[in-house]
Length: 225
Length: 267
Image 1: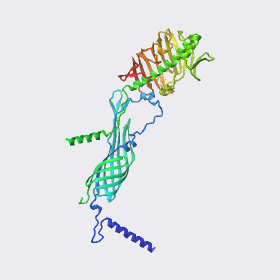
Image 2 (image 1 turned 135 degrees about the vertical axis):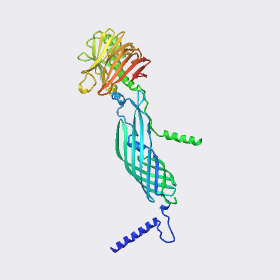
Image 3 (image 1 turned 45 degrees about the horizontal axis):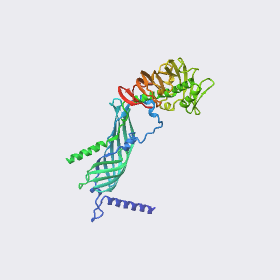
Image 4 (image 1 turned 120 degrees about the horizontal axis):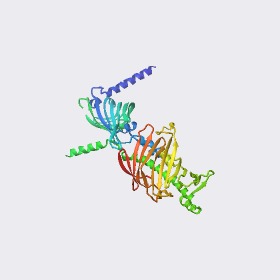
């Protein structure tokens, strides 16, 4: 029993010493190790643009294939009585993302993103060619996330992120409807290059896009930054 | 200057890249009218060139003597045989399949007042495409050189068809200089009105100006003149109205929602 208590006391002391080292606590009068807070920023705000592939796939705006069971389906007289219309070009805003991150530790961040992705398509009356109405899909996402940065240099940062939040989808195809669904964003690898202002590139999966490019600003860092 | 060109190029690429999906404007404004007409034309083609044609071939066979009958069989009933059942109906077989049963009532189609009951094999393609069943028709000689082809179908309220009464009927009147043998090689005039049933829809037609058939050697309809009005109806749906005018050279002018376009006749 005494040996066990002694062992845990020594382990605690060791951990405390190690923590002290990482914070740059003066161990002796001859050496001072700089803290990451001295040269790495703690706050950043960023803006990225991503592709809308995942957002399109989850909102039926991406058709991979169409199955035709009946070869005579297109001749069915039932179709004569449907609106005689055709779809115009479908536009996308792409995924527009804005977010903020706070550096809790040298390698660990917390933050969140808001994202918007939209699809817009006019529908025309076939005989006259006049526009009949618009069909649209709006996707608003709020995704809190955590980031793990595994390269932490003043100019270059590499990281991975995990986020889980929700999306509000509002669409109008013949009828208008709104629903809420879970949204997750996974960043496999992200790279930031720059000092205060930086450019970024991210690769992952989620409603914010698979490939995202953007820029950001780091602030409230140490006075030397 | 170079900077502005670069900015313009970047903006052009950016704007173009916002197109997510191309539209589907690959159909003409009167496409739907053409499809409605194609349905009526296909059915009429089948009625005339399959069912009624077989009746006129049989009429020629019945009117011929024994030596001519062999020649008619060889030319107009290839790989087929004509049999008479115990009720006196003529049955035409192609292989093991019976393709037609005709009750002549011991008369010829050239006899004024004759009325043949003709049953012909239903066309699978018309059935699968449009839900159309041929059923039993009556081919009658109403006057010299004039024949009426007609058919009736009973309907019930449970069918939810947009019709009044308890039957659907259609009629075509064919007028020629003489009793035809091969319809496609005989100039004739076509009139008529009626309703085709297409599953849960109906197609009303009215031949406003007699349709002129030009003799041809391809065995098909070659309409060089005439006009027909078509109205497609379905329960609790808006009617679809189409006008068709035959302008020759294998073409038809479709009038759909006030827009007129020329189309090739589909066979």
